[in-house]
Image (cartoon, rainbow, N blue to C red; front, side, top):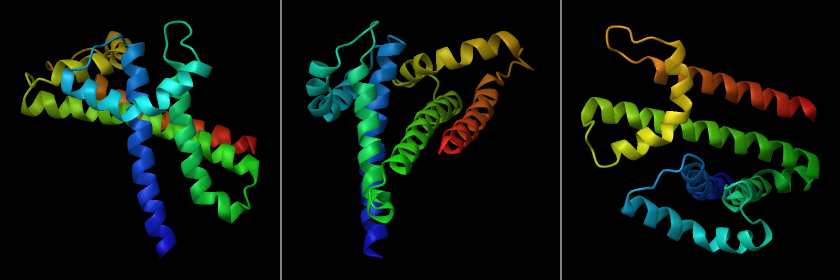
Length: 180
């Protein structure tokens, strides 16, 4: 019982921190400037890890690799806390589960931004955060919008993206776990 409570707390903290680190990386990839409140939250919550990592992993190709590697380290530590004691700290399952969880969190993060954008479009398309979320999703939706026409002025590309992301989660998880 105590172990499951501990794991709930570890997973909640790890997913929030990794999510912020992945958001920080993705904001730089799509070159979107966050609203001041979001930017301040993301940078203050992640600077303690990203700044030291940048000394080891400088940005290459214009990408903040320290944020991405930091997210993976958070995932790795949460998996060590979850299965390390059970597996006797066997390196291979810890790395495989960490990779699976890392890619799951990336895909789930994309799904979350798509859902947030859909909610904004229904509730308040002119909300202050709506353009920011739209910019985060644009690289995912642009290729789909070229293939899927509007049907009755309804854009089905977010629905198609959600389905494709769910397929990607299953494919990547299966591929990684089949290695081990």
